Image (cartoon, rainbow, N blue to C red; front, top):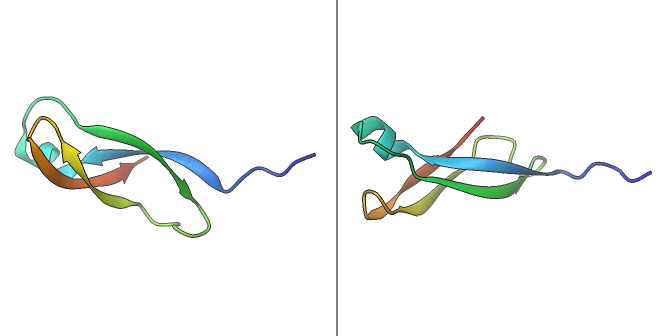
Length: 60
């Protein structure tokens, strides 16, 4: 029987838009390796609502 992989799907959510109180939410789905990155992932991604690149953080 095969082992379960270390890769999991995570959701990245814009934190700048959340703090500003604007309606709507920018979210991206990606995968990460649990062994290499056990902490919450942070990436700079494009936010179409704010029309600029912002920091997106992993949510649980």
